[in-house]
Image (cartoon, rainbow, N blue to C red):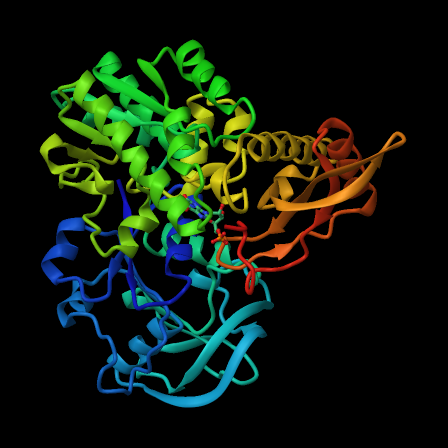
Length: 507
Ligand code: XMP
């Protein structure tokens, strides 16, 4: 398989470069900028990209890759800080300039190679405080903006390119075309990274392991795909366990069991531990305490299952590529199977090795695999759901009444969003409930009932979120249905706090 290696100099967009390249079916891998020459040789890349980063090349502590990497004679593309690194390395000059953030008009000076087919000009996304004042000898300017005279440069005979702007962000027009020009034309990489290919390779690798595999499934896309891949490789040597903690969305436990047992024919056990979880949560109001109790009880139930149904040699986990890189333990594409101990709070005496079939994948690639493996669309279009479940959507103590209100009201919110064609457009949507009550009139009778809070938010990564401006008619319909269909509810409110200062979940 051809590989593009992206050296990470700390840009917030580094992962995006890899994702964009993988979107046109070439494997791209993110590595730390200080990767050794020997390590890089082992990866055997077809081309190298230097990412952007917050540093200035003229500072004494500027991150610089190993010198020998420049002598590998591989096609090289520097983006933003990477561009400045190339200028500096080959004898040009980088200076502090007026900061340039946002969209600039890039005029194309040479339509060959990197900027082939891009036309006369494009809007390009800039985010930098330094610029190339003087380009190295032998290099040629292939694009400029009003303020950056050397916004794109090339040393064509050595296939070295530098661009000041970010082709990986959607705000750069034809950014993907520029990356494609580099990867496909300059590097000559083959488009052989497909999810069908990944599935075959993963199954082949997993089929070589011995012993039984334990996989906790939640009904979420990652654990489902992990289970299906392993099942295809080793059949019933895989045992899936699903812990019903009583804090799931309405009827979710039945849907998940049905999917695994009937659709997928996987060895699946649902452990009904609702009473144990709800018992431990009785009388507990503090949000952090609730989270802790749910976490500890989960480990307890899981450990019991492992003890009673083993022996297991492996524990399967749905770790994804961004988690691997963030934790700084990237081992590259060969490391589908990695072993270490005591992950996720499980006791060490269980002595489980860790199996992480998705550790080289981005979320959108996992979705593609789910589609290929015929996971019902309903499941992978579903909003993210917090591990501690409805215990974080019930303010104060988790009681049977509040739990029922939360489940049914959330179902109504979901149904109405789906009906309005908005479910997939929002990040998360649910109804929360606390202990506040308000008076209502039902028929001729005054009733003192619960207040339900509808929460619908837009977000891209859950780090920040804004409340969704839902049409008033839709909110009205939700409110009517909730008060009509749930006897205990008299009032419905809509939460209009964004994150920050609020969070997405109320507890
Ligand atoms: P907050 O409430 O912090 O939530 O804005 C951000 C995102 O994380 C989810 N969330 C959790 N997920 N365990 C999880 O697995 C948790 O304890 C937890 N708390 C919040 C939340 O649903 C949102 O998507």
